Image (cartoon, rainbow, N blue to C red; front, side, top):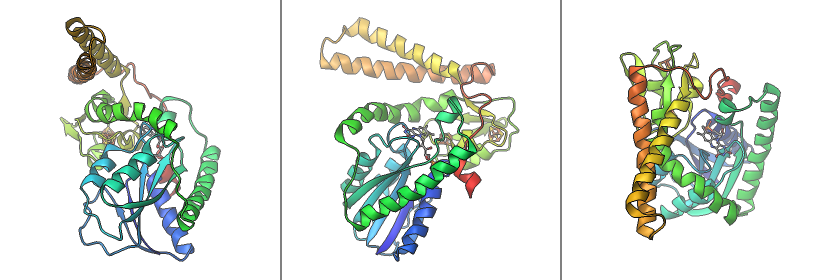
Length: 317
Ligand SMILES: Cc1cc2nc3c(=O)[nH]c(=O)nc-3n(C[C@H](O)[C@H](O)[C@H](O)COP(=O)(O)O)c2cc1C
Ligand code: SF4
Ligand code: SF4
């Protein structure tokens, strides 16, 4: 079978899985025609394939907004058969169903979906760390999961999340699309440890970080990949609890104002307006925090301070 691969990888895990999948496909006698990093523009004249394999990480129980935008707009080549794989720390949420849905929307015949588990690039920053021994175990299992995924393709077995999991996960994912793009970036801060190297600005896949007076400033449009946090050479990037707090207060104020004007659960329109006011309030709160933070650098209340960064797959290359 002639296969083309498309992938996006925030911190290197999905790139690692892509590389191992290419090797496994070759061992099974398939011909890999191209592998394309979605951070580069997709050429319209890629050679014809029998199947396109898409690989994307899972952020907040779904696929990154960056990948959503790419799939929506990329020129489609190949024989219109596709497979959608996700790479996650624990579970794929709504990601596999949503990826398959988007590919179908672009005219693909989606053969199956699959999940490969890799070390988490988010939770260890806030919670417990993962040991090197545990990491090795996860890599080993991931190699086995790649083989299972390829078996499913070869035996034409369709798999995806069950409906209930996907529905519950969508409750987390759809707010994420708003939250990441418009709110979370305003909670990122660089501490006095910053050496002004410009790496975060250069490497951000969405190009939403700009150095101003040598200081990184985050703008809207972030996809939540945490590459900046994980790859800063001096671990100077953090999320501020103050930012989250300002956002929460803003959301509460927005909701109360809407409630006072519109009444509680009076009509569908009233509920929609309350949600809009809540989200707008969150945005306004974090925006205000960022402006204050620039005036008064506050280094207390950082959410991930002192935690080792987990640029996992990069260490393994
Ligand atoms: C902001 C963020 C949110 C995440 N959310 C989830 C999640 O909901 N479920 C999960 O299983 N893993 C989650 N992860 C972990 C990633 O899916 C996992 O580490 C993946 O391998 C990252 O791939 P990458 O290095 O190619 O970006 C999250 C990671 C980040 C950075
Ligand atoms: S990568 Fe880190 S040290 Fe370099 S400019 Fe960004 S925050 Fe500063
Ligand atoms: S700002 Fe950081 S987390 Fe957001 S897209 Fe850029 S590198 Fe990823």
